[in-house]
Amino acid sequence: MAEAKGTIKRDRLYTEEDADLGLIKDRKIAVLGYGSQGHAQAQNMRDQGLDVIVGNVEDRFAEQARADGFEVVPIAEAVRRGQVILMLIPDEVQAAVHKSDIEPHLTRDHTLVFASGYAVHFGLITPPGFLDVILAVPNCVGAIVRERYARGQGVFGHFGVHQDVTGQAHDLALAVAMGIGILRFGAIKTTFGEEVAINLFAETAGLSGMIKYLLTAFEVLIEAGFSAEKAYCETFYEVQFLVESICRMPFGEAVAFGSPTATYLALTKTGDVVTEDVRERMRQMLARIQAGEMVRDWNLEQLAGCPVLTQRKREILEHPISEVEKLFLERKLASGGI
Ligand code: NDP
Image (tube, rainbow, N blue to C red; front, side, top):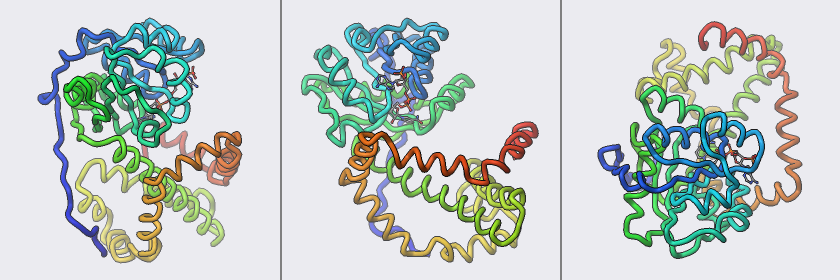
């Protein structure tokens, strides 16, 4: 098996002992957006005694925030009243909202916090030069960020600094990271550019690769005459089993956790399907991401009304997997997971 070339860099894991929540205790936190991350981060910070208001347009997200006990005001007002501004609306709309509702109200008393390097690194937003601009990112969907926090646990994350005007940006980023709960697990320091490159790479190479693998494996079994139920169970089960094993034990043990036959096949045929040329395609993909090509593609797709994405979503929903999985999903949920 080929190995990664070059020196392997290591990062330090920062925890709550490295942070001082007091830096943001007396500052009003404005959470802009109450979706996946917004609802989780707002509640985690409030649970630690921080003073949080939510900025959102009047719709179901605003209703939910009110039902959860928050004061909800328009985004521009939240920026005016807040000092630590958490940008928790989708990456692709941040630039427009920043221009219309955020930037005109920013002063040097504000700290601007992003949960992704996307908009700033790729130049969609250029924050004013007079304030600190920082990053605090949970490596997880908001529902899990909140659920773990409520159980007294945390999720892994990243933090970083784009602009340090006060000389305190590093410490402020750690304070926000503690507020949203990621230092309970631990977070590593990153840059906006690194964070977004790795995140988009993992989504492009990892997520899309896994989706392609699952669909193709299912289709090959169906073509060979196996029933949809058998094809679905085996194909999806193996992936679920590996992922669950990785969550519980070191990778080297997880890949050898099945039967001797499974381990033999998995470890000796590793390169038969995912062949070495994938490495070069991944390198090219990473280079395209770092050069901003993926973001440009996504912007053009949105300007055109998302025709390709809509078509792909429809194809997946209409794939024979959707029919067969209904039964299995119900049974899985009823029987505790597998
Ligand atoms: P969501 O899609 O869940 O955000 C929804 C919220 O954004 C709602 O409050 C919605 O309100 C508001 N919103 C959507 N469009 C607009 C608009 N045009 N103007 C004003 N408000 C708008 O976002 P996420 O929580 O997924 O992402 C937020 C940030 O967190 C992003 O930077 C993302 O990269 C990052 N992140 C996300 C993770 C995830 O797993 N989801 C993980 C780690 C980081 P309304 O519809 O009422 O306008």
